[in-house]
Length: 343
Image 1 (cartoon, one colour):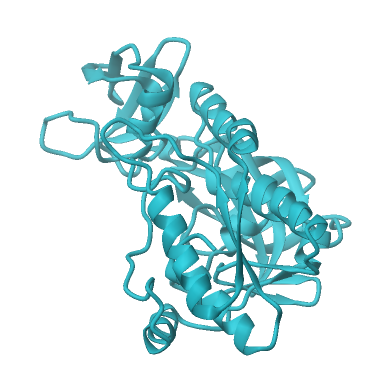
Image 2 (image 1 turned 135 degrees about the horizontal axis):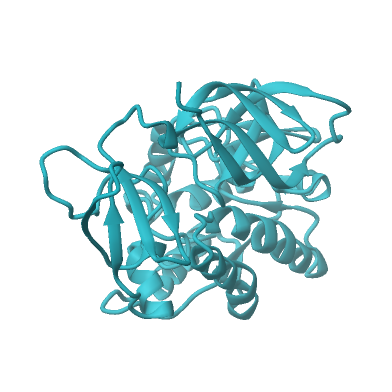
């Protein structure tokens, strides 16, 4: 129970269905970042209040050391290498559906439950019924064993229904806003967090598609491929990041949305993970290349992903999640990204 409305209603539904429920708050992070106070104490108290109102046991698991090692340090290494990681996916893989699961089972639990908007059908992971809130993209690295021990009570609901259920049962989290920013810090932007952890970065040139230096960036790690906002480069037309050279500390941009360096239709995947059986031969399916991104028809041959339609702004380090209609098959982390060739 995170102290949010989704996990609160998940606990409510389980209690109504006759489960013996224990609420657990995972303390993953407690440091303030600059002037932003970490909300963990408030979230903990909200989760505890909900547990009291539901008359269920409540515990705290402290995973701060493991979280730093497996999620935060991983994220920092990736950014320093010029890649764009997804800490939420790593959190689910290493903390929620591994560390938390194992500790809960050792603590006497038979299964764990979370407030994710996904569904489970036997050994299959399915998208949430509410397509606007579906979180299956973040869970593609779950193991089949962990999936078999997991329950997702709110996956068959829309967000509006979850709010209504919380209000109807007087849960203190009913009107609590959804958390924004980094998954474990709260209302903190990634740039502020990187500065907090790594310090200010060396400035460097911003170079446009003609090779002209048009400005100065505040550190190449703060930019991701396809990014438009935050460049602070004048000139009228918007600029898009096409590449970063970490060794030269240079950020490359373009004003041309049709610039071939922005578009890709072939991607090499690293660290492939399958929830079910590993495909035998080429796989024809759909892929989601960013959270809430569209499903794109594709073909996977070994570790090479061929997209039916070229996509804009793909960045190494991001995840490509593979689907067959509603089912999540697995996916991988984008490595080498081949840009379209000039005509």
